[in-house]
Image 1 (cartoon, rainbow, N blue to C red):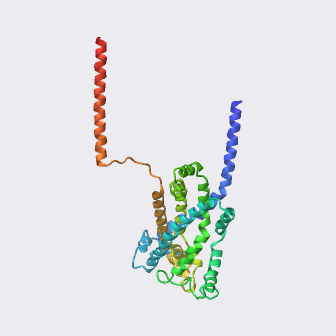
Image 2: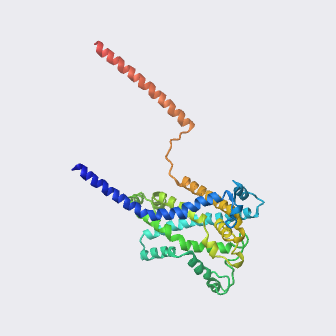
Image 3: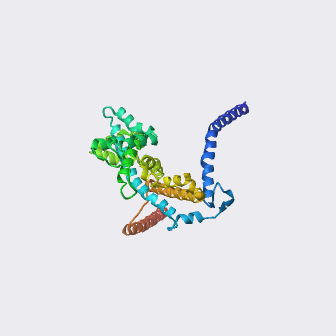
Length: 350
């Protein structure tokens, strides 16, 4: 009877596991063909002189493409590395500011002010908008002609989205900054709101009873409790904006539309340009280098925000004191043991 029951249970577990595997098979197939295979193919091509239209000329050249990337006399390589300058400047400003704004909005909404549910929905709604719609909305607002909404309000003709990197394109990046803040604030805002709701009220009440004000509760209770959530969101945000592509693409005018201000724009421009198809191996090598740089930033962020175990660290004098204390404790223990031994001998003789 017991064997029959065990067999039925084993069959039920097998059917359950088989049903689960059947559900994930479509995802695994899509992941393999559209993620794993392209990544492996790109890595292989990065070590080749590759032209898909002339397969007879394809050849393995080892690290030749990677050496060309670091060649200062190669104008394409110079353009590739210059594209990182504007990217890093944009990310180093946007990511901290956006994170602080998201945490502040989440804290305010969790105080449940009047109409907080409406404001919560308003903050999140822009996240459902695509980047093309973002470009249409803000592009029409900041058009560099009199027909632009902002120019019409100011009564001036300001070319908001013109200019070239590090010369006269500050307004363009300011427009991208404002648009990105409006567009992406709601994502992590929802996560931070959920994390704040999980903070025990007893901790906030204890802080308040100890005389802590609102800012003390934020920095002593709320922020430490959300450290793990902030680390994950910060990691995702950094990785996402290192690969920024849509905003520079949609916020541009005719004269600066082909200027590659980010590595993703650089890679996409050369991949889609027929004149550079013979340099497919070189572009794949650039993609590999960009991926390595992104991973390095990810590892650094995770290492900086991870919780390290506390270690006992003593100064030189403290270590000396602890050593002397241990020595004297051992001497006293030995002396007490000797005294106890003598007392036992005395009692035995009596």
